[in-house]
Image (cartoon, rainbow, N blue to C red; front, side, top):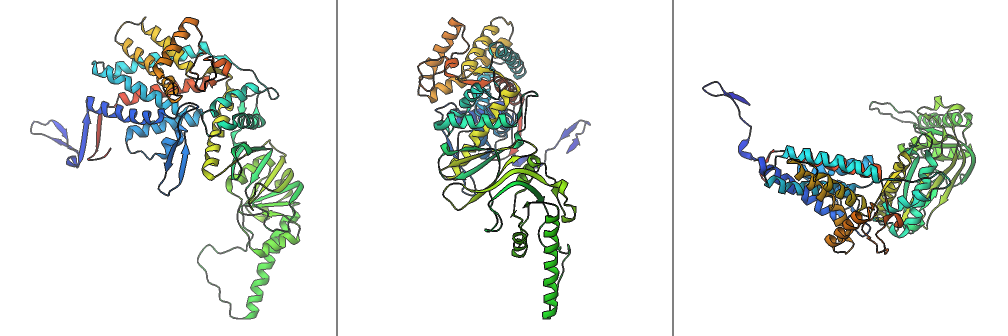
Amino acid sequence: MLRYDSSGKPFIIIRDQDQKERLTGSEARKANILAAMTVANLMKTSIGPLGMDKILVDQDGEVTATNDGATILKNMQVENPIAKLLVELSQGQDDEIGDGTTSVVVLAGALLEESLSLLEKGIHPSKISEGYEKACDIAVKHLLKICDKIEFDKENYGSLVKAAKTSLGSKIVNQYTEKIAKISVEAVLAVADLERKDVRFDLIKLEGKTGGTLGDTELIDGIIIPKNFSHPQMPKQIKNAKIAILTCPFEPPKPKTGHKLDIDSVKKYKELLEIEQNYFKEMTDLVKKSGATLVLCQWGFDDEANHLLLQKKLPAVRWVSGTDIELIAIATGARIVPRFSELTEKKLGKAGMVTEKSLGTTDENMIVIEKCSNTKTVTILVKGGNKMVVEEGKRSIHDALCVTRNLIKDNRIVYGGGAAEISCSVAVNKASKEITGIEQYSIRAFSQALLSVPIALASNSGLNSLEAVSEIQLKQIEKESPFLGIDCISMGTNNMKEQYVFDTLRGKIQEFLLATQMAKMILKIDDIIRPTGQY
């Protein structure tokens, strides 16, 4: 609250000040930087094809094993506000690019770590931020110089598979990278418009099922619903299906307010039963009259309605989820109908084949809708030994799908294995020597921070990290080869071009920009007020 002293000067009284701690100036910056470094150091061990996984257990006892940066940070339930910013940073990279979620956090942590020594030298945070921004511009321009283009079309997509394999190399599916990468690329190409460079991600469905191994994962040309037909005697295969999609239940209407009905005689009970049967009959007649040969209902229906549908030879599926209904409507051209009276032939969707299939050794069947009339829709059925493996497999495939989508939008690539970071580090360091003034220190610090990713890669691969990175730096300078990187999997060559280790240019630029913005934001915080004993 605002108050005035005896001379009329205003001052502020902060409520419950005795219950709060306050850090200001250099103490606040140091606390923030140390918090960010702690999170970044935690993520370093998960980078690269030989990176470690993390096991996370939530409050309900659900176990998640993953090395995906965004998933780890999202499930960590951090309380520190700076750590929360890094969680959002990783999530931003995941939402925009879908890959590089670990690297972006490690780079942001390295930038802040380098800024510590600059702050101790007395350099102002604003000057450090300006230097980082200039260095980031130099790095991005250098990426544009050293990038390559990959060519592909719907028939020849080998280069896309190689790029997808790079993103899968550090995942749980790395034993089956060739097959999973091919499935991911084929799924994206099936729904992509290469002329407009557009990908309809909503037409790719990821479905998981326990049983088998990740190598049994398959691409299905259509939509899978994890349901059975509502009656075991309904046909298991429907050709040239006309699909009615209903969001109204197969049951008599009920008053919206509280109600009570007294039945005190057999006659009244029979009348009520007859009214109910007439309702069911009217509903099934309306569906049959529309010409539908398959009914998909978002709600359930009782045995009476089920029996009538069987009599009318109308196969039906109940309790279909809202997301599945929307996807089927898009794919088949059907209209979602909220009332039976509105159902007409024009609102039916069309599919070449609908089949109930048994997948795996369990009793659970799935319904596969294929040859949809309106748009091409595909489903990737991910299999695994348990639920945890299936979920991690789905996350890995999502990364590969995102990489393929990014290459369709922009087919420029840079080379992985830390090659791009080392090349940019050399370029930024060289540029810093031509800059006079205090900013050269922060530009040089940016150059050093870029090496954090290749150092982590080398360390996780069991190499002497400083020696390996210094050797690659020297080779890049001598041979002017920006595609030399860390040989993480002992292929016998540091040439990432020969190893086909790619990163998308779009993803790498985004990684540099987001990490720099986050470092600048944290450096500008000089005051923290928090409840006593927190963080």
